Structures are given as structure tokens and as C-alpha cells.
Image 1 (cartoon, rainbow, N blue to C red):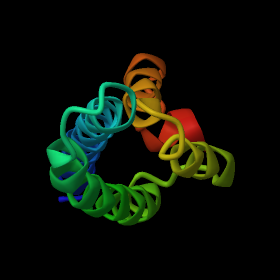
Image 2: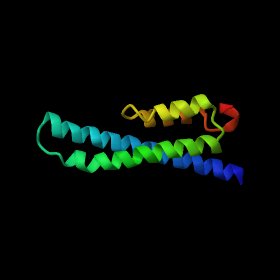
Image 3: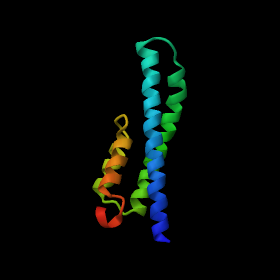
Image 4: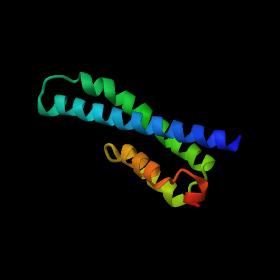
Length: 108
């Protein structure tokens, strides 16, 4: 049962991390269109709220997953900090997967 919860937590975190990164990318493109090319504000209007929601979802998911997977405070802090720079959540997820830090024995 615990193993199933851990696997579900890993998958949920990966999906939310990628979603947050994609909405960040969409918002960056929208800001480029709005401020640098002066063509349209539609990208910001669309991706601004989407990214805001994805950001909150990522933070909440990271906090829940950190408990389920028994991450150390350091790994949890890095996960939360990764939500700030563009595509940081994607980089963190790749690190997490490669380092196998999602397993309780590996994180400690």
C-alpha cells in the first residue's frame, strides 16, 4: 500500500512539475509578445492565470509529496525554490529522477 502511494506521489509530482514549467514558458512567450514585439497581450492574459494556478498547485504538491516520500528538509527546500526561476521545476524533476532522490532510502 505504501509503495503504491509513493509511486502515485512520484507521478503526480512529475506531472505537476512539467505543467508548471510549460505554463512558465507560455507566460514568457506571452510577455515577449506583449512587451518586446508590441503585438498582443493575449499570451499574458491566457498564461498569467494558468501559471499562477500551476505555481500554487506545484507548491502544494511538493509539500504533500515531501511528506509521502520522506524528503529531507533540504530536498523539500530545493523543490520549493525550483518554482521561482523559469523551468526550474523541470530541472528539479530531472535531477530528482536521475538521482533517484524520490525513494525514502536515498533521501533520508
